[in-house]
Length: 263
Image (cartoon, rainbow, N blue to C red; front, side, top):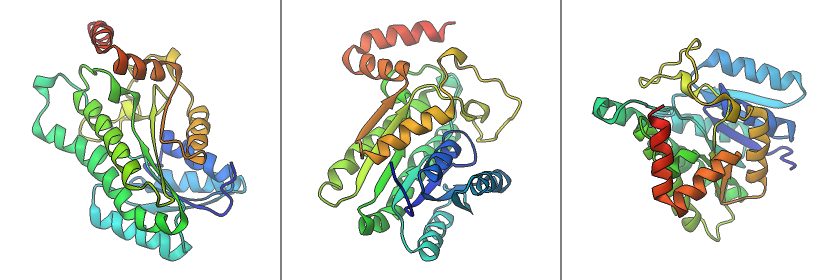
């Protein structure tokens, strides 16, 4: 996996999977450009990568603002002359009982996890076409199973999967690959971001710790899938199990997830 001198743009890179992927791509020779809203965390990441001999720069950007997103894309290509890999990773989760969720909750969820992801792909694709590059969409194994108390998040990740399927057809023959990645439980800050999109460092993570993958291990799997230009990558053992049960035996998936919801 040699990404030497390739320019790699990663959104939502200030923490979690985005941060881990940035470090992994840089370790493989990539020239990483990391994007997020929290500048201080991006600066820490860039300094860490550079201290290890890697190449990294930052672009502070709220990807839900299309004008900011477009300008960031332009600056990246103008300053570096190319774009080889674009990773649409920015996202968060809205949780709560269905009857308690408001239209604003649904709109916030879709604005970041779906619309911003789609616009990231849209602005990146003309430049990726010039390099026979790689587009990467980050979904979730929750796209394939019922998710009580997290319907907006699951719906948004199901939409990501559908977007990836459509792009794989549209991009056939162009030289550009689209890899949609669906992780299972990975140690990240997603559970510490509330339904308003506000991060709470002291919030507890309700996900089962024994099933959680460390981010560095997850990043290696994800970067390998990108390198191989895989169309879909579902990983962690429980993530793959959820995928197959959800696809092959929906009644069993509903039963299992229903029991989990009542615990």
